[in-house]
Amino acid sequence: MTVTSDTFPWLKYYPSGMPYEINPDVYPSLLEMIDEGFEKYARKPSYACMGKEISYAELDKMSRNFAAYLQGIGLSKGDRIAIQMPNVIQYPIAIFGALRAGLTIVNTNPLYTPREMEHQFKDSGAKAIVILANFADKLEKVLPQTEIKHVFVTQIGDTLSFPKKQIVNFVVKNIKKMVPPFYLPQAVSFMDAVREGASMNYQKPSIHNLDLAFIQYTGGTTGVSKGAMLTHRNIIANVEANCFYLSPMLQQIPENDPNVLVAALPLYHIYALTCNALSALKNGGMNLLITNPRDMNAFIDILKKYKITLFTGLNTLFNGLMNHPRIGEVDFSKLRVTSAGGMALQKVVAERWYKLTGNLPTEGYGLSETSPVLSANPLDPKFNKIGTIGIPFPSTELRILREDDTWAEVGESGEICAYGPQVMPGYYKRPDETAKVMFIDPVDGRQWFKTGDVGVMDAEGYFKIVDRKKDMVLVSGFNVYPNEIEDVIAQCPGVLEVACVGVPDEKTTEAVKIFVVKKDENLTKEQIMAFCRQNLTAYKCPKHIEFRTELPKTNVGKILRRALRDEATTKSN
Image 1 (cartoon, rainbow, N blue to C red):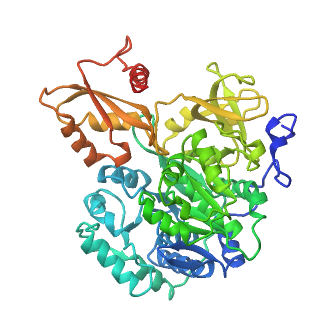
Image 2: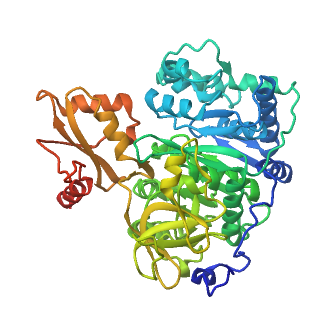
Image 3: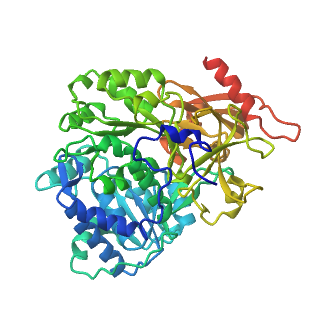
């Protein structure tokens, strides 16, 4: 298909210099992109966290040393390594080191319960893990059930200078009691591995751009979390498109001024991974790592020290900052881009942020399966349609699919489908799940990814989400899949039946609500919550619990979640 503004109406809103198509094969693999960025920006700061900055040259050296260590202990191309840390400087050292060793990274949420960790590690076949000491007690519980042989543990202050390192680690462990006791005799200090790698030989592996770079876990229709396979080419394509998208605004930054990117979202999240950690390699930006964005007072203290140029975040994060009494202390005069993803951007939040900073947030859209960005609103405020997910990225097509598997017309709703070089080849070792989300166009034979979101395209090529085909619940930008919640709670003693839905919530967009039919009349909400906290990450735990004598079902006995959701939504309104 010829790519023109006639066939794709959104192209007329691309800024000057932004190509219709990008070259996803511009690098043989991410390794070449990493090498280029480290060399080009060697003298510039790459990351800052807790008052510590490291240059690209330092990151180059430390990640290469870690890569050499990984190779030295026998890990080779394609082996999976889990990384389970919040936003600390150790994270970029670990991911770039792992990629340079040819490994495939399994990003793991630090807040996962042992049950969730065990599934992810077993499913991916991870052979190694880099983990923050704060969570190592959970690893101890599941390690024997996994294939993990190499454990690297780091403390939160390990990259800081003396004596701050010792003070921070002492306070975190002994004063705040944030590091539960653990026994992992085979564990190696992550920073010791980095130091020892300096005396070991590093051999750059031969990587093809179709090799796996990441296995990014997301929810499953069966209740089992599944890994989206993201190749080097997938990630390169999205980074290239993202940099062309940002280029007009970043060009406004004077050459000698710092380009400071706020990384408040966790780098293990696909949005921050691509748009912060990896895209910075192309524009020489410094990621300002926010380890705990919920501590708004400390967050503002950090923001005051820098003149930020790019801010990626969620609607709830922007809203929280604006409602803090000290937000006026932050200098936003250099802010050029505010990118909102992960959840819907509310019009009132966007307008308040624009009034505060002079920079109008642009909402984008993507999924773990698409590396992640598929579309975004133009950065030019004249073409920023708040309430929409914007227009497709270069080399990306979005179309609306009807229920009868035919393409919809302009203004007609249906499932949003995506085609582009950033779309995953499938789910790791789950061809059945892959088949459920792929659609082969009978006319041209192209394979499209079915997002599960119901949307419409207007005459100008802007897309808007109007509903979700899946029963997924969106909590502060994180996907929660009802099947998983129901599978866990069904194992709680005293539960006969359970149904999970999402209900509107002012703070988190949606909250998890469950409806429970008791098997044991003595069962309490408190018992269910205690069971959930043992087996589910905090954002997956139900905020609302309602007991019922029965649940609505179809003629064949399937629970009608939609009826429960509609009822719960009506009540909340």
